[in-house]
Image 1 (cartoon, helix red, strand yellow):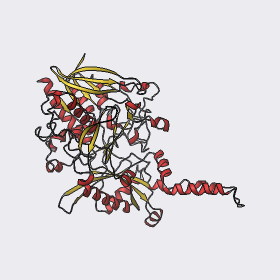
Image 2 (cartoon, helix red, strand yellow):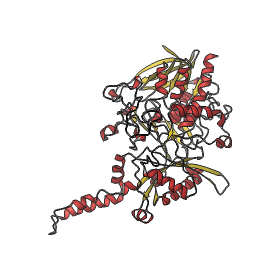
Image 3 (cartoon, one colour):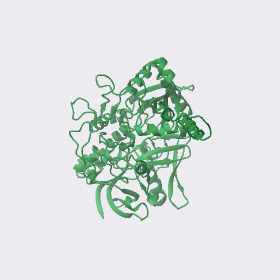
Image 4 (tube, one colour):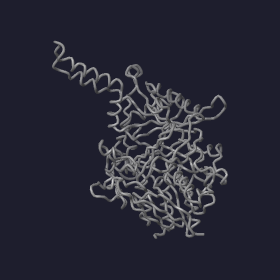
Length: 560
């Protein structure tokens, strides 16, 4: 049986950071990632390939996106070497210092500050350089900034983990070869280009960057961890683990997408002196809940397991500009498919009627160009124009009217409204009142479920919507809710948090302030699951900084 000093489950912002620091300290490390590796050019774009780009192994899907369906919540996570960094919008924002004390987190800002800085450095973070002259390229950035100022707010250009320059110190360039284009060994596959490029400003960050422009975790922490001796194993899904005398016994399934889910994958078992769960909030919580039910040794896990779920206050809506408003106010068009997905962020604060202080971050969103076609097809105006054209074609044989040129009618199918539509992304301090638990399905599998309701966060979501409406009006448009929220009353999050919250003891948390599970020395959780509440801004930086801090305890345990 293989033995390691540490086995890490998952390769996202917790697992990748942990792997690098442990390998740097000389530990023998193995990272087990259930998803595939995605070198430049590997992210699907064609419809047939996109159909396979979802994660549900028992149905034969081994792709990137894992869509979780709960009663009042839809959550999206990633499966792949690099975890959530493959599909996030590159934004690195520190959690405001005062929030740590206000929400009584067991970790203080001062303890995380050096780790924040270290992560920003490793990810090559810089502010968007094409916002203003002489390199101005994106209308949406300036328009969003103007709208924020009109409401009395200052919009920032947040740090982005994206390469805009061919090498450090160079002027920003679009679509230029990077001086350092080396790929780690888990990316070496025939048919994929090795050259990475600076940002193409194509708005495809959230569906995977095919140009290697993002400083995602596979190009940064995982690459360096591998160079230091860590083993990165894709398509390796952990299914169970248990404490033993030598540490923890871990069993994983080795997937082969060529089987298409028809053959049972092989299982392998390894030993680890220490085990780090970093499979994301939903993944790590699910694993611990399953082991609590199936392994007697885990029956006395903290009663808070599965609790304090939060969607980080995520709220998605769209600004739709009116042509008449554009003409009247002389506003520039919103071209949401030009630039990275996010370039600007504004923090808004307010006080509810009951005296509760609320806060949120609102950011300009982006879309890939191909998404405009889909959204235009779903546009009611487009559907009416298509019906009008079909009616005219059908009337040709029923009347004496004659017009051999239908170019104008066909042209009318291609509306210009989508060039004037931009997503707005909100996140902040909702109420972490969700409880995760296991539910048995008809085929005997245990699946994760969630008891969560937006009722306790209703004032928060209403206020975020009001703030967005003001920004939309200042941009010469109106706010349009996303369909899931408008018609089904479902919240949508790409930032699920909680389930294994940090606490001061097992009575109020699953893990301590270093991520170690109470009552189980050497067992750690290092991802969004450990959050005792919403982070507020984009969670990736805080998750990575906490993992960097947690690594100190894993290393100390090893040396003790």
